[in-house]
Image (cartoon, rainbow, N blue to C red; front, side, top):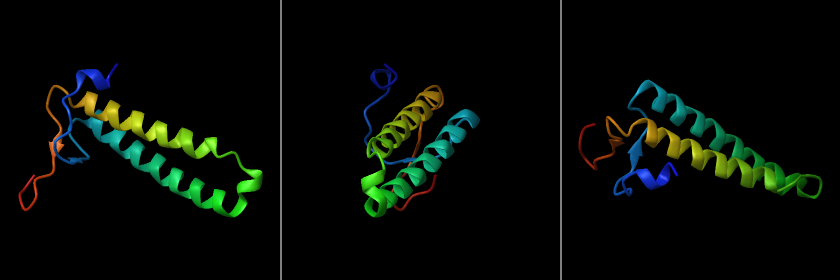
Length: 86
């Protein structure tokens, strides 16, 4: 539902915007880091771990990214401009 209300991405989005959006971007970064660590652990200990954990973390980070974009809906996302300034 949140995704349907957002403009289609045409550029990379930089973390930031409203304070709430910035915190959601930060949470997304932390979850992505946990996801990478989980995939690495699965490579070593896969036989005793549930791969759905990494899949869940992936979907959670996607949700946090969408929520951050939604939190910036009124002010707009901070877009990356190649060779430009913020």
